[in-house]
Length: 181
Image (cartoon, rainbow, N blue to C red; front, side, top):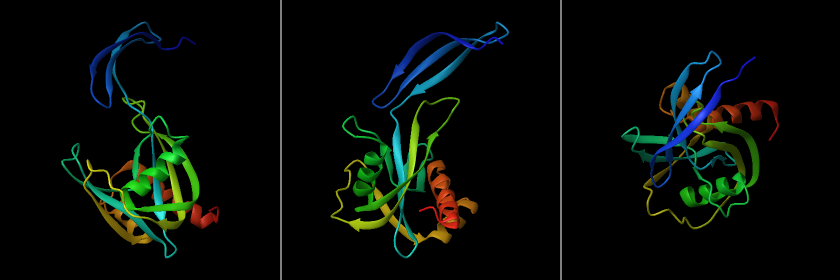
């Protein structure tokens, strides 16, 4: 069986975080197609769950939505990070002041398979500790603590629309029911 073959990748635009390319592909039937491809750094995200089954979320403005979203702490990996777990814990500290002593890896997620190469590794964190919040001056974040069941219902009510957050909440429900973590 003949496969799709990339004939060319042309840089069209470079911004501070992403590069946008035009891929020229030859399909198995010989047809030539042009597709957009956006290159971004990988990241990590973590659902923080305290001893009372409260989840710690962040409410922040997202320019893509031109609105505030409710999400788990997350961010892109820095070159000095030893892996995605380090990124997730760092982001939890930066965005909430909380960090987990126990971490469970849920999955590595391809965020938008038809456009972006960015992967986010999703974690669940428990046994939380707290330290002075060292917030990122570029972010305006409000902490939102709510019972896990309320957060899960917010997914079904359309109040939580962020993909990595939905994945983490549904995974935690599964992890709890199977007593994995």
